[in-house]
Image 1: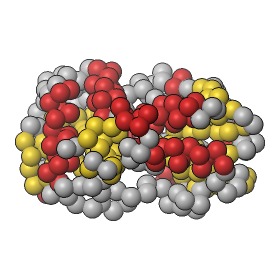
Image 2: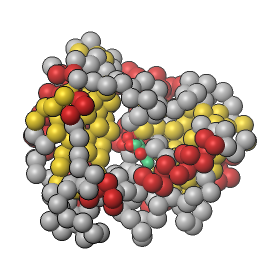
Image 3: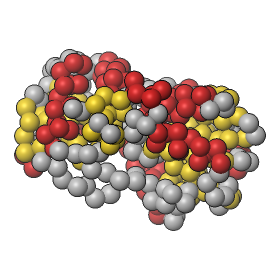
Image 4: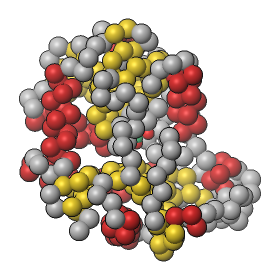
Length: 303
Ligand SMILES: Cc1ncc(COP(=O)(O)O)c(C=O)c1O
């Protein structure tokens, strides 16, 4: 997906011009995938752009780093302030923010001991992440299984394990689908290459647990809160592949993908975006744009 350049990137404590935010080719993270990251969206509100659930994203960044035994050289408050300052400096009305901590240049070999930790924050304007988001996306079950929690800490949003997502996405696109569903090693539905999954069956919404290898999605948490406030029952339970085929409605959610309806899975039609998906999408939009006051505490205004 093409990238729209902004003016600045924050790198190791200072704002630099976008094209000067560069790293050495012998950076440890480039060779061994030793990095952690976050994706955050800022939405337009009546009071200017606001970052959605910034604190939860920062907390997950620090939790991910801890799982990889990386010590970030900047504290949460500093990264929070740097993120707000960058979005302000880039002059966005709305944007996507990418925070990254990676191991840099200085040691070679798998052992990361002694490698410096670099932190960067970028922001750019990004529209719909998945092709066909409005009419519903077409999914394919990947032949690649999801990273197993016994192999890598799947709760960490770490760079290396995204090879698994990239392989699944390529396979799905090559086969003419929009996105891939990954199953866990024991055959339960885990998540998509960059989104969590929700299925409606009757009056209940189901979403897979993190024990199936899925990231603990912050949008998954937001959708759970919105759905509960709409009077729906949400259950975090293991799902079978056939549960997707039998879904009354299905949608994906994530920071980049927001709430995206699913039209079919493995060529089994689920259909046009359904009524519950529509209600959740509307509730999500009202929450992230500050129109629904009940969720204002999710927003950090850029100012
Ligand atoms: C693999 C994967 N699952 C789920 C998600 C959704 O997580 P969140 O809602 O916190 O962005 C993402 C995106 O960050 C992801 O990359």
